[in-house]
Image 1 (cartoon, rainbow, N blue to C red):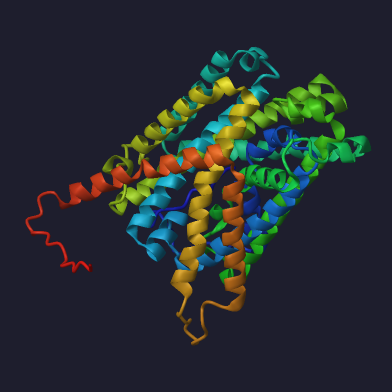
Image 2 (spheres, rainbow, N blue to C red):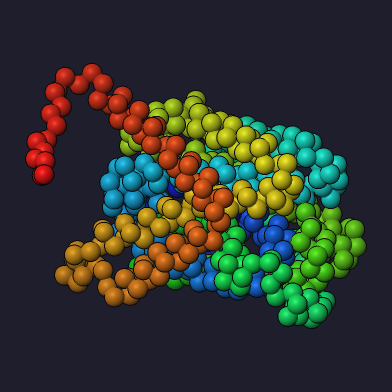
Length: 466
């Protein structure tokens, strides 16, 4: 779950001076932005449900493609930075824009907590104490958070160099174990007895696994590259987004099949480093260490990218007057250091509060919270698309909202609602409370704007009916 960082207008280079991006380069951008920490621990999470989780991957892959198509279209209709926040503000008004920025921000920093929890699981290969001792594990996780905070506060160039190195290294262990494991699959692991071992009904289990699988697709919206940088954007962006998302979906499914077929279901469900355990089974301890190191690097890279993003979304909202001003201020290094530090404090608190659930338990709750608070911006983006395109025509006089747009957007909206329900009652409960907690912040910002204004506010006349 790594996200591309949008360029500001001030630093943008004119399209005429840039080499245009084609389908394959854009597709590679999609894949690189999505594949982060999620897949490295998700097989263990999904193993507690059984092989029915493969259906969750299929449904989530289809839903992710629909959402990706919505975002790729919106990148052409509203060619501005800010992603779901900007789309919601333009289409549904500034209050909804604030709520989406608030919820999206929560999804970003809570997602960082899940990333660092996954990293600790793989660090346990080298130092078992961090997994066995929750206090030590939480301390290591929080230390990693502040190391990456320091890297980001040093400037975008420092964060960019760190991101480049980790991105190059992160796919190697995933590909190694995934494709080698296919040759050692045990068919008994896919028997009827292991289809649904969660104790829930099939539909409930499928909904739960689909919501968990969506964690691995978060960041698909970052593929909405500004259209002036893309060769034939009306064709390239939708095609690249679809191809990239499909590639990631296929890789995720193959990886899950490989690990479920290689490792005994009960062992996999309790694993804190499933890919390393698979590598150990395939080639011994040396393989486990190589995979573990690659997974740690991947998690650090994802944490680095999302730490920067967790400050950029509120920075965009702050500049529009919808977030506290501290989030919009830049340090001498040219980064929103205040937003980075505030987000990292919240990540640290979330990690500390949930480590007593155990590593996998903490990961499950945190990714469900991140998915829930990110799904609301996704859902509102689908509605904003309909609002912005309805009744409008392009330069040739052709209606912007075609039948295929209505079908794709409606299906994406329904999928988002289903995934929200699959997040679970506890997650929706806490996610809703966190969203509502943002309303006083909005009220305070509005009050500060109006303070000192001399105009008298007159309530509109209201006629009461008996």
